[in-house]
Image (tube, rainbow over all chains, first blue to last red; front, side):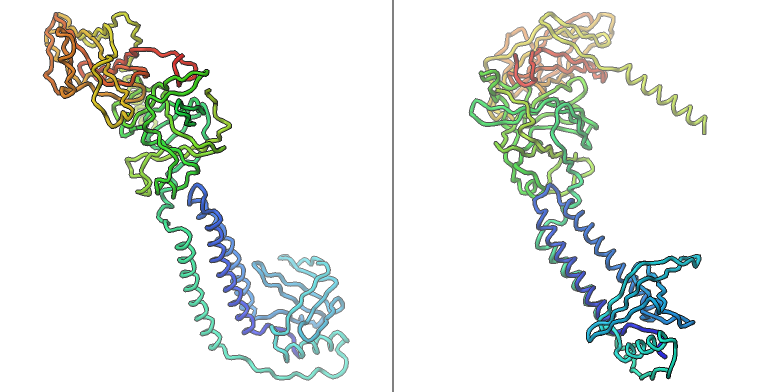
Length: 385
Length: 180
């Protein structure tokens, strides 16, 4: 009598190795795809976050497979077992939480062809922890013959047929089948795991290397706040409190479109300082653009600028210059609204940067300020003309 | 524990009250002489002028060469009840042209000889001028400023840490960007 049906251990291990390889390749390719897709976003935190989420998902998948395999191995690769009273079969479905189903022979139908064997059942019973039966509806499992030992399968099917027919007649003849050596399998598995680790590490090194040279910029990005430029709004950096009162779109007497930000600033500590050098405009800011000085324009050199207001050209007052103020010089008594003037592109949106520290150094020092990237929508600006 | 909290909160309130007691003050100069008092030393601002000439030397921050000299005429006097003398120090004064901090002129700006002879231009690296009790002295404070800005004179007379801010001019503007 053959009362159990087991997977061929070698087939399971091979399948496991195959799945792991596929997942590893998916991980590497996915990383490259994500990094390429979000190459021009505001920060490298975003792609890193996406990659992390992606890796987490694939890791969960891997863990699920590993746990299933662990359960399967714990049950000695057993798939189906005939119960002790020989009235039906126990089917185990392996997953994160493996479940066992009881199918009486009356509900069971087996079909076998050259490639597959299929177990169909109209109903099945599942027992919960308190051993209460729960009726499960129609389902089936279909297994490729490659996963099973042919002799074992034949014997098992014969046994079931014998029992289904009420155990009449002669007991089926059982043929012997050879067992593969265990040690051989283990060694193969170990070498596969080593190979996987190497591919995973090298693959990801290449994935990161080809798509983003500046991995060290990651930390620096935490120091860039990304906000929308809004009137009557206060923004805080490590050292300053900037209050934007108005933001204007205007045109200079030389015909250049400019952005004028009317703001006031409160220093938050004595080490603070401010000058026009801290303000720049980018068509689209990115950490890379800032590191490469790839700006559209700078706020310095705009003192004395005349803009068109009410049809005539008037000088802009209280423009921050390239020297500005430093530390103790600036106190509450002189904290008045002032203006930043900077050339803007004619596009519908662009970015206005307050640079608290030099990005080339990646992260602000303890005594340096943090930066803010203001996203500007041209249609939201007040127009002076 | 409770006692500790009470003591700490008392210290807190004491510190808060002592800070507010030293609150800085702001003034608006209207053209009439304005007198600031600081423990027996009086500073009277009589007038200010933006010079059309001479022009300041080119400065790197001033790309468009717009800077002008701003001269603030003041009188420093010492009450006779004070027994000491007061030495007028250039570090007592600072000017803001809009958001930009401007130091008092230095000797190398070569402007003093262009001014009226009875005026003493206080310079960064010049000799301190002393005022005896019961006397007063006329002094000019010179700064380089931009012509379209608001000017705020920040004074810290006698270095008491007690600042007085004098808004020298007032620009009317509806948009904060250009004058009316």
